[in-house]
Image (cartoon, rainbow, N blue to C red; front, top):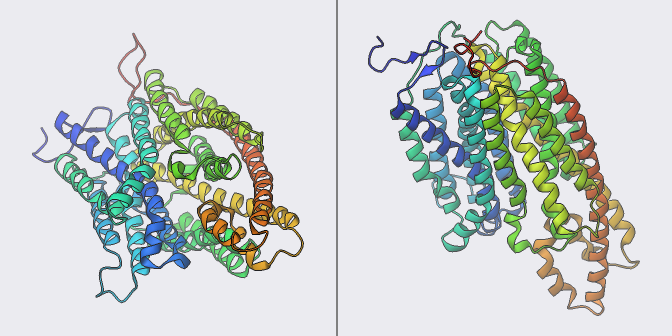
Length: 544
């Protein structure tokens, strides 16, 4: 019999929780995921007010970049540490860091004792917040893998992915409401009560378990080389849109990242307890899931951010409801998450869902690729629904498949690698598509400018992503000059034509990438999920 407070395991090797422990653990994990998801959408709506109050327009991209850097780096590192020392205290540390830094973000600019102005304070605190979010997000689905057999995980992975989707739907609206009725600071303060409840639930109900059969050696060289690879890589990809692929800073950062990647791989081959065991990728399931996650992140998430621009800049949809423009896609993804998770748990299979989901994503992208200036809004929504359902079906599949194949001692590392490749893929997708889109847009727009147009009048048109916000100021400014309104009308017509061409190209490229993803998913090897029992069959299979 287990001693009080000691973790016990079921005969299948998974952590055995009492009903109160299971309820508290799932509630704490769901609230933590809700916080991490809300934080990525709620802050964007508040950014205009933040920039205005903190006088930080020149530095506003760093609010997101700092968060991206630390959260991406944290995922694989702390997942490996949790494989060695256990999940509970790392997860709690991440949650505490996230909540505490949320309070600091909300107070940015009010702490005069810190020798930084308000915007720089916010950037620093967002970096710390990203660290906490990366730890939490990297361990949430790993803990689910500790508690449930692979056959059961699909259902819970789908439900948790649905939490992410719901937060993505309501986050922008909530951020706008808090900013308008209270203050932008409440976009951060809202994390505090929810975060405290989540911390209490995990602390009280999720037991600490001490991993067995692992060597407690930290691969410090692996930590250093991975960090030294990811930081310049993410910075280069973030700056590509502004400076181009051939700028010295981008080329230098990519070169450093490539050198450090080589050193990281060399380190991992020789490390006694590698941060990312390369032997994991000898398993074709883990390799294919990693590739599929990368492709999904690059092809789908890299393009999604341009759908609102198409609807606003081409179809003329009002920006006042810009936060809800992606609602059909996210709502469809939630439905796909729940349905796919239930099907996976009932059938004990995952490959068919991966193939069907990738076909639906590719179909949605093909619909986007065929859009032009005469496209009806209903067609955009149809593409969103089809692609969204596909996203919902495939997202839980990769985590379940990886966890089903990975050795138990590498569960955290394997799960985090799946999320890590999707994150890198989406970052690279944003960079590649952003660079391609702006190149085409600027070239086409330059050819549409009437002769004799003053250069000063063209400056606001260099970035079409901001034009919708600047439209009232542009109308007022051009209205003060003879024939100014007609010139503005001509320039906006050139903007629309250039947007259509640039967006068509990236949607076509995205469709090609996602069609290739179907082939990748066809190559996915299917292993029956451990713990699944068909009607009339014997007891669940033991894990290998």
